[in-house]
Length: 311
Image (cartoon, rainbow, N blue to C red; front, top):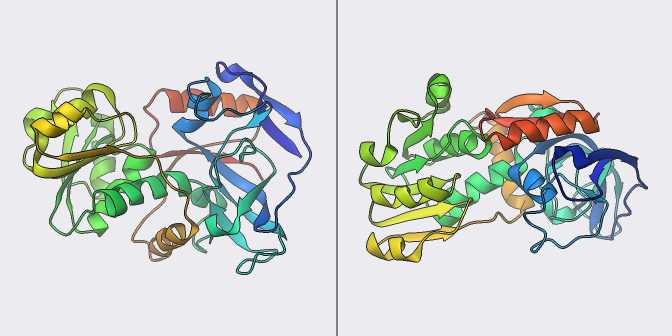
């Protein structure tokens, strides 16, 4: 099969095309023919070597942890899925990712692809969608009437988190640049903060929840807008325990857990059009196109999700 791999850590130029054998499935897995995948920050962070202590793999490494496609083979213990099913998933984090024509997925991580979505739209959902859902529902337990700040509302996680928070009944503020003001309001944001000219910590106060996707200074300043007892979750750093104590809030760092059942629930919201996929750009499946896609993701200014059309 064709795959785009890395054989060393480094810049986007280490992404190269290579012929590899099709992966072999275990009893609890299916083999998915990849129709589309998408780019997430974990892809280029791993490619650059930032995660090698945590994920100590041997080369070649196939990046990519979002997939939409068709099942072409099922393991002996697989009960719910069959050959020909259209599925989407956030597969397990392994060195055999989804920048390839075929990938293996554990049955428990699979969900049926929503019938009203293209493969490209479906591939944009799993990692970002599960991250947003788990931050809002499992971690900060957002409820009707909560005031929620979502940082970088035009981004991959933010654009889904705004819609989900509105579905849960929250009042939503978000940060974005002026060119994305109409976009984030269309997604459902009640309040827009232009981060280029406004300081969110001066504009907002008495918030119940912050979903931080940026880390650094933005993470630290986010404590200032929370009411005592408020909840903060970040996917881009470690909260400072001193700030947690000072502001009398709970704060945690979050790394998503792949979960097919939850993805199926998100799929139902997509079927009902309560949630809409946000594909910002689509690239072809080649080393050169993936290099450009990584470059776009690394700017931190991509709108919506960056998708790779494989088939």
